[in-house]
Amino acid sequence: MIFSRSRRAVRLAALMLGAAAPFFPARVLAQGMMSGVDLATPAFTQAELSRGDIERLIAERKPDQRLDLAGKSLNGLDLSKLDLHGADLHGARLNHANLSGADLRGAALDDVWALGADFSGAELSGARLFGAQMLHASFDRANLSGARLAGDFTGARFAGAKLARADGSADMKNQSMGLMRAVMRSADLRGADLARANFSRADLEFARMNDADLSRADFSNADVAGADLRGARLEGANFDGTDVASAHIDAAAAKDFSRAINLDRALKD
Image 1 (cartoon, rainbow, N blue to C red):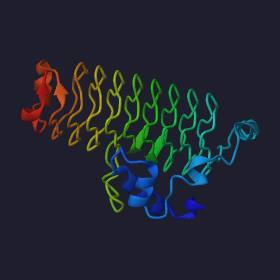
Image 2: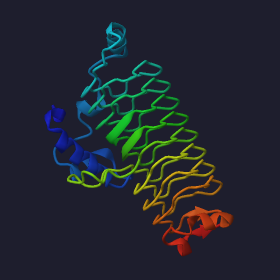
Image 3: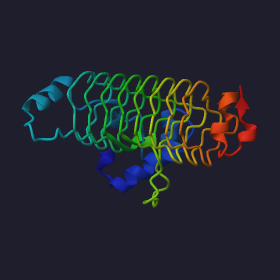
Image 4: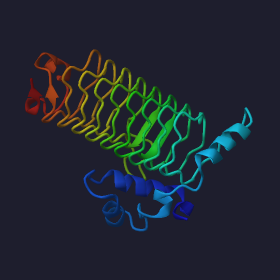
């Protein structure tokens, strides 16, 4: 099995994929960036369990027992509205799976592959998504309050999502595998609630954050070059050292970016 490798190897592969641009096909990324990881194999395209199987596991779970789905291939499954709170999904493959409306509170989603998966309206408060690969996934209206987000969310949708107090900051304690942080390049965060969230050193290039609530959020040393922040609430937000080159900001809000870098290159509308 592909995931019989150590966690260290998996996280290295995840990091390398996160560095790739979102426009290359999955097979090209896999072969060009990660020797031995082929996203076209059954492990990343098929499911080894059915929805019925998972429903039975949920029904049989004892009150103090954690649902163990770690490393499982669950690609393409309809898991919508299931009670998966606290589940161990570490290293699971959920590519193009439907988890809309699912309860994933406090779930362990470290090293998960969920390319193009649907988490819209899901409950993910307090969940851990470290090293997760969730390019082009949908989190519209999902609740990720207090979640740990240090993975690749390039092109993902978070419109109207709750990310209050979420932590997408860089992991500065352990950089042996490279800088782990939230990568949200070209992500859709329009109308999202990021109040008090920590996205220090995160990558939000070209993200759309129109009308988002960024009040008291920490974006210090983050990259929001080319992002659209028009209409966003910025009260108390920290933009110290934030790269705002070519970012769209409201002219009246320029003062809120006084400690950002490349402010002279921002587009003030």
